[in-house]
Length: 347
Image (cartoon, rainbow, N blue to C red; front, side):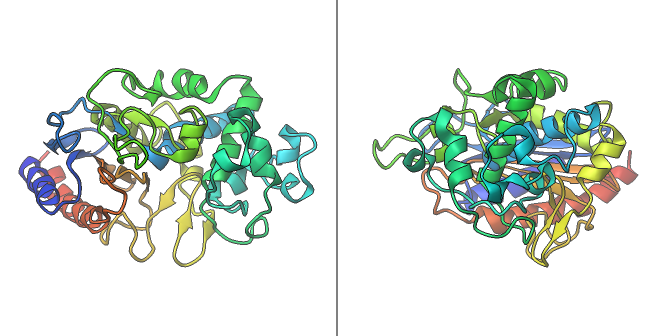
């Protein structure tokens, strides 16, 4: 399996899918392979297993989704709690939006607009989101929205009276032993993302997402940085059905299909397999789940066998126009998942 993963990552580098990448695959009990290729930036040092990547929207499941699921099983939230419970004076068209709507992207919020143009400060962001008209009626359709997840983050901060980054550290990353994961990273060995057209300098250690950047790097839609070993810990927890962090009942509910429109299937925070051109590839069953990040990161878990695959790449460096990663990722999942069966037979 090591040779297979090495070959795949080399192919992705040669084909211009990314300037550098780190990947791993395994199951709940073992890591089959870890590989790294390329550089952290066009002219930077080589990647290694300690290189941290901007997780982009993969942050949604690493932080706020885990916090919300723990809140459900601890009795601090229910899926049917409405926004007007947390935000008195919430606009009437948003009052009936529930936690379930936010986590399944069925709340009707605009996918993303620039908070810097609508809010006077980060503290004004919630007002700007809640006052903007909905794109679709509440619950009518899946409308993937970073704004809805930012609202979920504000709900969690209201429930616990703590900032999101502190909550994520105390209630997710620290309990899981993810010591190199968090918001607003410091130090070096961080993969660069897009070159800022205004300065000509690539974002490095500063979140790529514009709205998370406006929110000072701490947001429920993006902002987490992590490395491959921490992501393996997270993936294996999910592959083992929660493994003492989440109740198996909670994870089963989270990865059940809560919303479907033919092209997309959504769990609670998670993308679900079983739709055409899904990022998880062509071979995994519909029970597989995971998430992607705009910068080039992804996580796939197949619960029937416990197989997982993590890809950390900075495909947006130097420009977001590079979309070669999308086909590569599906191919990678197909090859690794097929190989995993022979791998598991030899154990």
